[in-house]
Image (tube, rainbow, N blue to C red; front, side, top):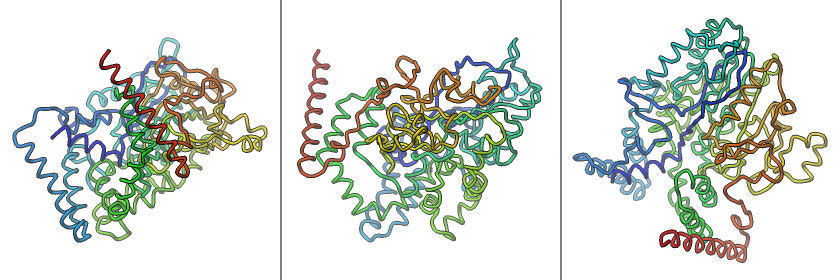
Amino acid sequence: MKKFLSLTLAVIMMFTLFTPAFAAEDATSRSKVPTILIAGDGDPLYDADNNRLFKPTEILDYLGGDDEEEDGEDSAILESVANVLMPFLLEGIAFDRWDNYYENLQKEISELFSDIILDKNGEVTNGTGISNARKNYMAKAIKTDKADKNGEYGLYDYRFWYDWRLDPVAVADDFHNYIEAVKKVTKKDKVAIVGRCLGTSVVLAYVAKYGAESIHGVAFYGSVAAGAEILSEPISGKFSIDGNAISRTMSDYSETLGIHPFIGATIELLEKSGALDALTDVAKEEIYFKLVKGVTSALALSTFYTWPNYWAAVSEEDYDEAMLYVFGEEGSEKRTEYAGLIEKLESYDKLVRDNLTPLMKSFGEKGINVAILSKYGYQLLPICKSSEAVADEFTSAKRSSFGATTSTIYTTLSDEYIAALGEKSKYVSPDKRVDASTCLYPDSTWFVKGSSHTLWNRYEDELVHTVATADRQLTTADMGYTQYMVYDAEKDTMSVMTEENCNTEKWVARDELDNPEGKKGRLVAFLWALMNWLTNLFNMIREKLF
């Protein structure tokens, strides 16, 4: 029962996905400029006694996945399920009254996440946060000049760890203090900053509050500062289940999670048979449109959307709708109840989100080195309406690159579009998926295909560190790599992208099969999926027998 509940809740949590981050920490580039690395949410959380609580990549462990049940646990779980199910059936379905269902859903899930959610002011009340080891490391680091015998620094010499749930505007104050301490101990006037994922929101909040006078160069690496669809769309009314996207996601994760291809083929067969669409249509017609705001709000506020830094990844286009879905109309009871949290969200909105483009442009205007690195080649997780976007699993290349024009996974940029670019056609990727000419920094924005948002490799580390610390602004013409590269995770190699090596996806997006037209098209798609399913079935049987 516990495993079943854990898995069910993990699926539910796809509404409010976590964003893991890993790094090899073996970049070899060195520089005379001390660099501060600020990453996203991959670091574990600890309780007040320094016991490890939660790491996003270990959500099943956190919810509980062991086989041994504690005394009374089954009955407690059944009671919890009943508390949610009864008002759903007896009040909602029967009489179209849903308030008690929303309230109980939020209450029961909040209890599961009580250690890590923040209070209604977006604050920690139970002493949870980063480990004492991280705090001690930073305290020691700012007392130590880590220059080697050549007076050079590495990317990982000065890391800024922080509680990645908290308000980035408040964290910016601690980040400012850390920068000043590093400047003092190294006797340097300026530092380079490499921001990854959620860390880029803190960097921009810091610049908005304190200016950029202490910055030599800055890198935005897998940034979500312009929005991350996986965090932005599900809570703004753009939640969508796409069976084709589910199949592609299974392919992306099959090797990592040990998922047999037969499972993916089965899901694809259900999709092509129309079964998944039928279930989705019924759910939407009968329940979804009645429940979407209430359920979205309950799930958001019982889990990860009490975390202001996750709200920082909500895009400008989605922000107002997200506020409406989660907190209700202006003057609502929930707006009053969560006034402290909302104040933090609005502060970031006015300080950073509303000024994103001017803040980003200010680096170039002040002669500060800029490196932007965007990733793609993975399916955007299949709970977003933008599931056909060119993306890195969690955010689109358009957003992480600050403005690239992209195709969809089903199309390429047309020959007519590329021809109209004239000399700017040099900015188009060999796979014709991306046009960097529309980026804020077209000459200092790099793209890596085949590198997911959950992996930060040493080649990318070296590139952004080199550019951020250089004695001048380096461009795509100055580096050993071109604007577009391909990463092979299995071989751990990075190569210049060519027309020959650019098809790195673990799946093929076939528009005629995924979105067939007419009865003939649907029949062809079904037969193709059936043959694929039978092939994988026979392969699985052969593996078991031989």
